[in-house]
Image (tube, rainbow, N blue to C red; front, side, top):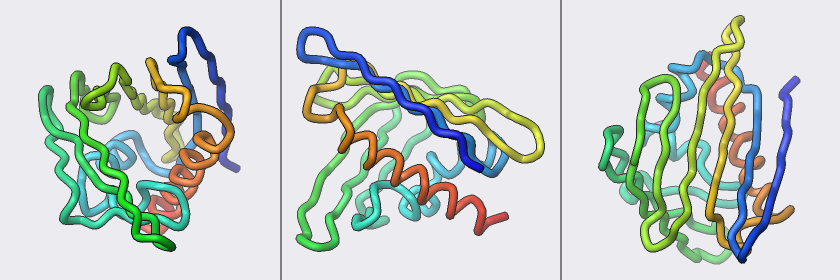
Length: 154
């Protein structure tokens, strides 16, 4: 069973969001899924979206790019993400700063043993439009897709 928790806080129009999930795979497996473009495109974004491989640039180093474009399948609408990695500890965590905003996202990977990893996504300085139940549902849908991807790699 996959554990899920979520918390949201708001102050001065910006907020924080923390999601916690338990995933199949070691921290190294999960970390690689986030930093290898060929894996990233298999799970990033909620159901009903995809990320074309040619839109992904991931440079897993401090100052490296973390860019992609999510495409809504029903409409073709495109949503680019442009960010820079500000901190990285392979197989443990990384933080990225989203270009043009104060928003930062940190993913932390903790080994639970038995080939399972706890992932904590913490976002700070999040604009109100990216908070709330719809945003959490989208992120959880992406986590669900990641569970399927990791389980298939087994």
